[in-house]
Image (cartoon, rainbow, N blue to C red; front, side):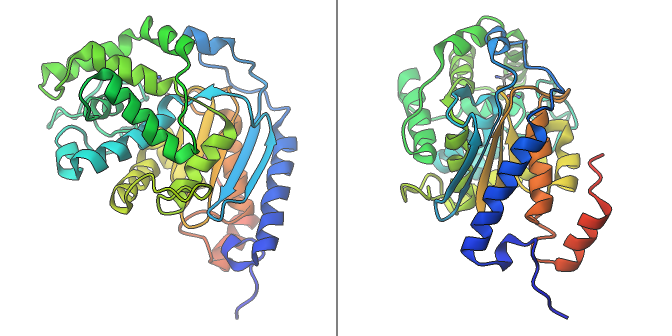
Length: 340
Ligand code: GLN
């Protein structure tokens, strides 16, 4: 028997869907605004100065409709959320085979900043953790460091709709304290998996982490990934479809570090978090979601970000393997999702 599924975004008319998205994010903002669990990142000293109570939720649909609540205009740094976008840029620039020579595609089960390489290949495990992200940054093409930085910013700009800035205070703060990332880079050079000057690549990596965005920007970036690589506001293509497939796959399996399994189990859509408090999630063919809330859990993921996404996935039936399946969705709602 077929019945209308009130939880499935794809099953309802556009205006119903839009009302449900707006109501859902407004409700979730109220539900979680008094949640103060977690702590802001302080290993990058500049990040510890952020107001921990800031909280925004933004959604952009693939048609370019935007819904937003809270501190959605507040600028914060992307941190690791830049990783999938730079990975996509490098895939398009030098090709998948070449990229795979430098970085793997396996989830790690380790913290994002683990000083660990694949035991057999000596490559970083995947491009979402620091080691892999640094290796990928080292593959950005260009004539000199400035050219490479500008290319990276121009690529991010296609997703946002304008070229973003680097927060120089956060950049300098991480540069002057980033010995752990320096260790990772030296380990990679030891195994011959690092082709450029370490200081130059680390500077660029710290700059990409310090790119400033708002929650609204981040939702537009996510929506671009959801819309087959085309920015729904500008109509500009930011990434090829082939590279996009790889980016979304790796975000799905590795986007939340050692919480990635719990994430796909409970939420079930590609996502990426950053220690600046941002969390971005992609519902392919439907919408991009972004949350900004700086208090982090032990794995370095925004506490409110994870809660909001989990609840949103349930109320809008977003899990990739449940979407459209009324019986599973209802069962899921009745039983509650076990988030581990
Ligand atoms: N810049 C941060 C670092 O390298 C990024 C980590 C993150 O956002 N998870 O440690």
